[in-house]
Image (cartoon, rainbow, N blue to C red; front, side):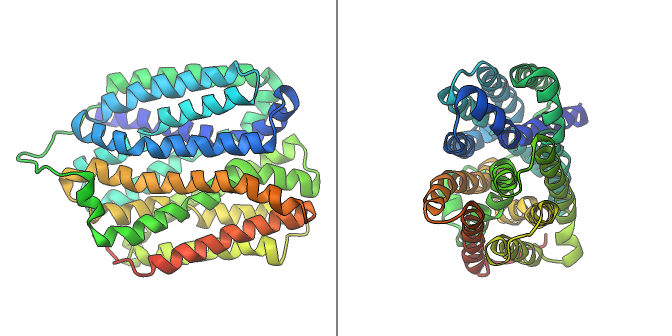
Length: 392
């Protein structure tokens, strides 16, 4: 039953990955049919991450006190399925924003519920590998939100397609309620609070890394890859779906690459620093040496997806310093910074691009935007270099 429950939590996280990235493919039809703008969609996408991030603190409390089964099943059913239903019936960009907030709330507990079970039921030495495999498998949602979603939209229309995913979300939520088993609490478990975690100086550089490590791949794959390729190279819906698919596959591979990296390198810090430095340089390359062709640009996006998938090992690095009785609040605090960073980037990227586009051609404006993201990564890495390493 534990394996079946974890399997459905992974399926739920597949949909979480799908929902955070599907606007990249839906954006052309939403702009054409309900009058949404790229700014509206950037704001809605950012609010998904903000809602997801803000829910992490109550989710952490709920995991420690109510357990992962009730926490994940109830929020995924009400927020996830309910929000997807609102999206399918949307008549304007305001409804899309409300739907994305609801979906963000619904998806908030899924990965953390899975990590909570891993932390309580498995040894710390394999946590990073399990975390990487989970995110790797769940990144199939990125693939689903690319070319397959484009084909479904062309075949059934976007409303019927999103409505179908609302039904699927509800079915998976009910399966979680039935099949997930809460791990037993340790005997004589100590008490503690979020403040105990915030008083730990070794966590702060890792929280900074969490804030910047996920934002580039999530933002570029979830929002900017389609406008960039469309405006710069005139890519059509099929090409946009294929480009998003390629980047999604690279992100899947990256999660499996980072999963066992701590055991291979004997360090959690070293692969994080190397991988995110590569991402920063790739983002800066759009500014300094823009790709000359469509598929050259897709290749750069794919490399960003590959090396930008360090989220599991960063959260494993932070979790290694959290005491067992604060497991739920520890992983959700880390996730708050990870999703919060992605949300801030989504929010900031829309008006930043609009300001850059007023004085630059589209290609130069996109390059400057991506270059600024690269500089933000380098700034975060400078602070992360002070982090204490861990291997156990």
